Length: 255
Image 1 (cartoon, rainbow, N blue to C red):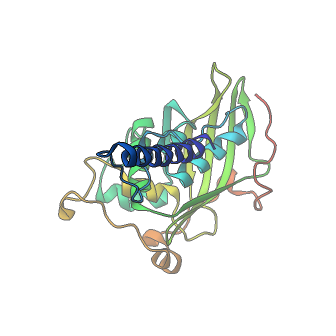
Image 2: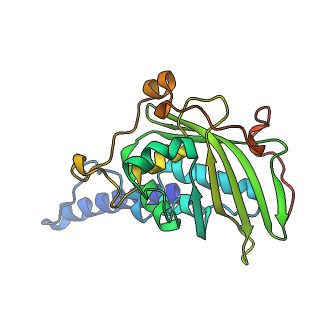
């Protein structure tokens, strides 16, 4: 990936220049250079891997690369400027009671701020997407709805659900997500991405009792044994009738 190679090349160049400076200092005297090990440069200015979003399958790949690498620009490349997120009703119920409005006006800026918090909280991040068979279709010229089952692992915490992703082909020939309708996966007691987003939304939604901090995310054991919020999964809708996943990134209809 370009970002990694550039970082490696920059480090090698710096070491070469330092060695050259030492040689010069030995001859002229008075010059010095620090050859002590350096911490990795802050990747904040590195956008990370940006893939060509030439088909809907590449959009979830872009999310995966950005999330696992911790590159917020790479992650956000998958989302349109008019992006909106819609949480699972059952998983969001307790969070809405505690912090009314926590999911209101969820746009691209809120998504960016929230996932930056997630990136800073969790060291090990991985996600897999599996296209749900028979649940993806073109909805008009240059638009498509894609149903993806996801498994999201963040350190010791696991999130699982289904994302109905509305995508649009923009003028540059790239597909991007305009709407994300989230739901808990049928039969699963693990929390969905809705819980992660609601717990980590940056801004004015933290409980006053925590002094402005965020409520701690539930552990996997708390979720798996008791079921998050103690609420049963919502009644199966049209997207919950699939019988499981298929190989990742099944072919999708064209625009």
